[in-house]
Image 1 (cartoon, helix red, strand yellow):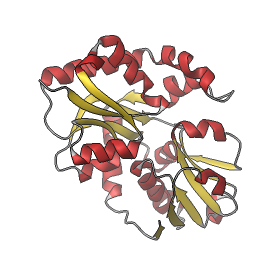
Image 2 (cartoon, helix red, strand yellow):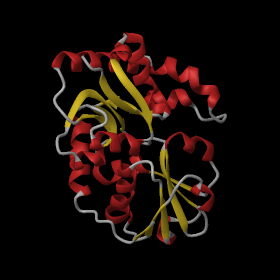
Image 3 (tube, helix red, strand yellow):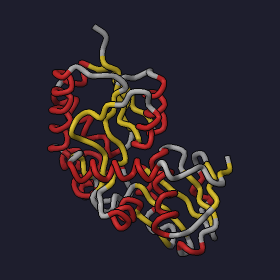
Length: 256
């Protein structure tokens, strides 16, 4: 029998899930690849994997989408790793550089600009290294582990999960485990148990990686308080609200 193919995000916030898969022995039963969020999405869309920890904005694009497990990458308040950086106040931002690694964060900032901040910047899709181009009236969305090295580098850092909570009163789900076909119930049960084991060990995982990030990053707080791993009912409501608003956002003025 072929192994289940899984693509997971290569960021720090996925480490507890990997810990659980390793500790439980589930990792031996699957073919796992670690990718940036956009590649996780592409692999699931093209069918080269069976399950992906994917940016939730990809869900409507799948011909068949099953949200599996009771776990996700979410936040009930500030997430600290999905930020809009700027050297000017929101009302003075003229353009926004969009991180190419996650379509969910790209869509989220567009929703916030339209419905919360009431601003209409020009959107620019960028590649790695664009952080140095943030300045003046040019802001930029940065996600993932890179944000820990940018603390205090810019005058303003707007946390997108915190802003979403202000807009909707709901927590936000950045990524969840999605399959593009039905998964055997017993396999899903074992997967769920493995992820839960890892979440329970989040503090242990944080200690292991603390020294790999700039001083003051407080990785323990990040993995045990900022990231909320349980896909509970409030998060499902937040996810549903995001997918509803996603359909109201068009590409607008985007420069490649």
